[in-house]
Length: 340
Length: 158
Image: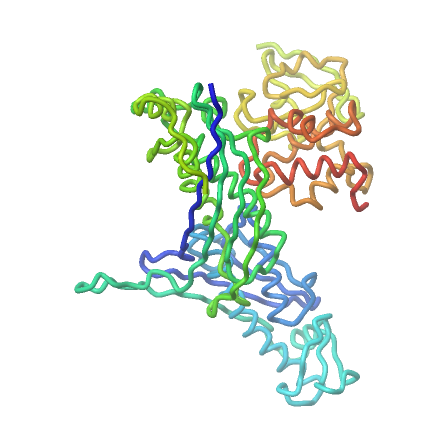
């Protein structure tokens, strides 16, 4: 019995969003008489942090503190339409819609403030702490709360804004097959190191090193959390998860979490991540989206690492000990490849 | 079916309820007492999100017959915060981004509490072993392990 180490690499180019009939999302922003703002969405936050990021985007665009923004989402009865949380589209599509809505609401807020301060709205700026003042004259100031009250009770204005972001359907050129299915792409490169036991076929993750290019990281901690967790899911897809583990008949498929395998806390490995920020021209504050692509490079990198370790090329996921062992047997033993 | 009277301590409070024979503790907690912090994940002991402490020992409430806790003390996540303050483990989970969708979090916290109550300064391997009965789909475990180690080491912002 020998344990063989192997190293594999993969790079990916990942489109943000999808191209099935156009890809829109909408957002509505309005102020409450308290001077706080509500963002109405129907987009779902599954835990990836969309509520936090849209809140940041709205606050930054309005020029108010992030504490003054509340995001009300996940109900299609009360929020405007969203295509959904998939295809790594949340930050990019929904974020852009929120930005557009907040920009419109900011316009009304500045007009209402201008009326109260008896100046031109173009001469006003926000301080990001809940006040609006005349440029170069901070003492000529009004709080966003007082503006909201004046708009509501005196001026009869709604401080609100509508936003939609639509990436239109890209048709396929019948001659060349050319199309533009996405407006921006994220990128990643990942190196996986594994240890393969040539007697049991078992694969242990040794370490991962990766670089992710995902536009501007609007919330670096959320990005990190997504990349760490997503890489684990990539390992899970590469080595563990399948609805039909060994036999084609679904009757033999797993029935519960005891049979549907996923890596446990003892199966993880050190993972060193570098985040590269190259702002996307059409992203909200330059963001693209870490989303699904954090899992994607892990699968080919692990498959390549197994080939590097024992010389077997498995192209059927997940790469179970049984498949590895059968392939090693078929080629008459482990054939470690050159280490690079 | 006749009801069985059942008395036990729930997060330090005496509880008296009637349960059907065969009712499991998870159902008794969620549906009869209204403590929704233990989650129903798989209902067969595979995921750990229903974890509770019975007399300080970690148990899967979905596999525990309610009547077996008679006269015993049951602790759930609902009893973890200390008055208005979060328990150091809860604070550490927040600080370390140890929750995403949050479904595994109650079970993870109870498993972590069971560990720290008997071993206040565990090694990384001991933490890993302690949460090995709990499945997390989102975090990749690393932030959870780090949060528990931070809480154990007192490295938590209060």
